[in-house]
Length: 292
Figure (cartoon, one colour):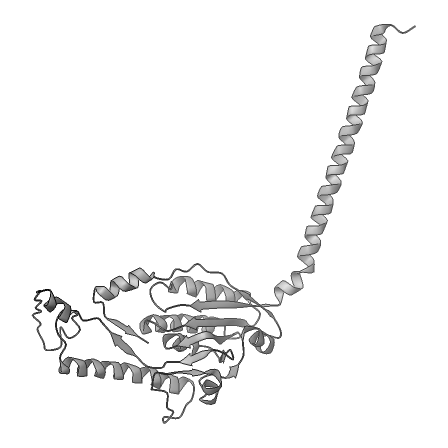
């Protein structure tokens, strides 16, 4: 005959066994969920492996060429992209130009990476605007392409500075500069310019512009008589006719033709451009800018 205590222990044992079974089932269910998730992850990774390998890195150079464009960071980006790619990279350029010396440094870095990976190529693609120092960088591509609505060119140099001498005179301020030579203060923004100073400035600009156009003629194998010194930009069809570019193509066309149909993937890189206020401040300070 069962006592009340026996009944209590029997019910408690049943409850414990039921709880144990429920915990076991819950663990099995969670294990099944985890297994399904892991299986799906593996399937996704392996199913995309082929596509991920068939890519061509796209390194972008956008905006004004100058100190805001970190050359060391760009160099590392190009080097990593070349190392990870099968056959090379696409260099996408969208720039109005800028500091010529900065552009030369970028060109040297690109050339050094090409020497490091001689079996791979760099194809330059001119996007909306590839002008002046931007086009100078594009010369490092074994092929230069441009989209059907791109603008290319602006080969030459320009020397700019503000002059506030008339404004100072109007407010009764006299500014004097004591220079050791006749041209030492020629670009001083607070003293009137002279005809001799302006002639000297034009000589400098023409010399530097001729240096740039000479490089273009050499790299693009143009005739010495090629009319590229006017500083204008050209539409793609004219640039192609002038042999400043090799083909009319956008990034996808280039990937299809030169990289066996690889999928173009833009390489991310942090970059900050100088603000408009900073540019205005430099102009007001009378900073002299030599731009290509």
